[in-house]
Length: 170
Image (cartoon, rainbow, N blue to C red; front, side, top):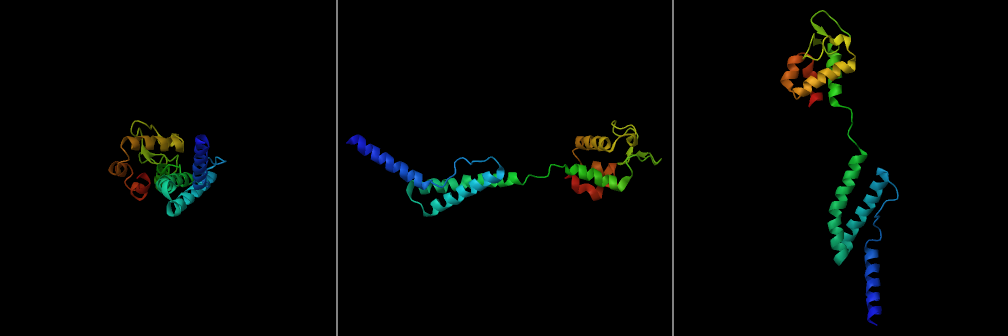
């Protein structure tokens, strides 16, 4: 008789727990972020409902779960909208170039290339006009990085063209 009573209580406890969490999707059936977000949103809605209308243990658990389910859902939604991987510095160098000259410019004023660097600039560039645009940008970016993209250093290097493009380097 004692074993039967214990089995009955265990069965009732499992049924109660199963009904309280019946709508939770423990493991989504797909691995895409959209599918994962959908299942997380369903779990969050269910936890909010049980937190508001539930009783006892299920209510306490669901109210506590709302916080981490919300965080998890927010992180998944943020992963679905990743930040643009293109460096804003590249856009800054293109901005400076658009105000300087051609990538192969040798104007005779002591400045060369699309970013108008001096001969032997920063010990990196002999004649910038002989380098490809990506090599010129890489050299300028490496030197600017060594100076932590300091506003005053950059303005000294490109006094007329850096100020309108400064926003790209922040």
